[in-house]
Length: 221
View 1 (cartoon, rainbow, N blue to C red):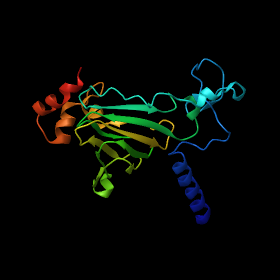
View 2 (cartoon, rainbow, N blue to C red):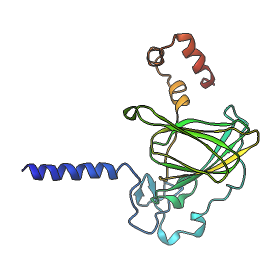
View 3 (cartoon, one colour):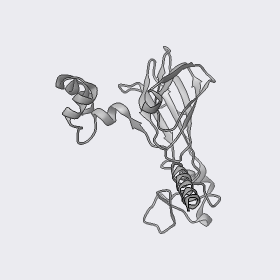
View 4 (cartoon, rainbow, N blue to C red):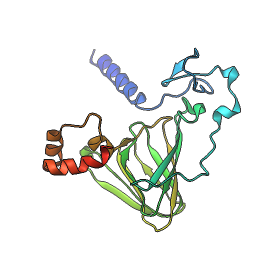
C-alpha cells in the first residue's frame, strides 16, 4: 500500500512540474485567433484558428529592426514578440524581445513568472545580474557583458540590465514561454492599484511613512 501511495504521490509531483511550463503541443501549430468571437478550440488561453485558414503571415512579425523609444525615466524600451503580437507562437513555448537602452539606461529589476530568459548583447555594454531566492540566500550573480556575450536569467528570479556605456545599447532576449509575463518590482510594490497598505510597506522596508510616500509618488500619476 505504501508503494502505491508513493507512486501516486510521485506522479502528482511530476504533473505539478509539467504544469509549471507551457504544455507541449499535440499538433503542428495552433495559431491564436485575434477575433475571440469566432468559434474555435481554446488552448493556452487562446482560441485556435482553423488550420485550413492559417497563412504564412500568421508566423511573421516585422519591426525588430526599429529602435524602441527610450525617452522615459528608465531610459529603456522592451519590444516584445509574444503570443499577443505573433499569433503563430501559440502552444510553441517560446517568445522574443528587443531591449533598447539609452546611455546609462536601465531595464529595472523584474521577474518573468513563466519563463527563463536568455539574452545576447547586439550593441554596447551591459551590466546584468539576477538575485537568487530566499532559500538560496538572495545571492547576487552579476556580470559585465559586451557585444556578442550571452547570459541566462533563471525562471522567476529578479534580474536587471543596465547600459554602462555612453552610447546606445541593444540586446535580444529569448524566453521559454509564449507569454512569460513580467513583474517590475518597483511598479508592483509602490504602484499597485489600490496601493499596498502603508503599514505593510513601512514594516517590510523598516522605514517611516515619509519615505514610503516619497517612493510611491513617481508611481501615482
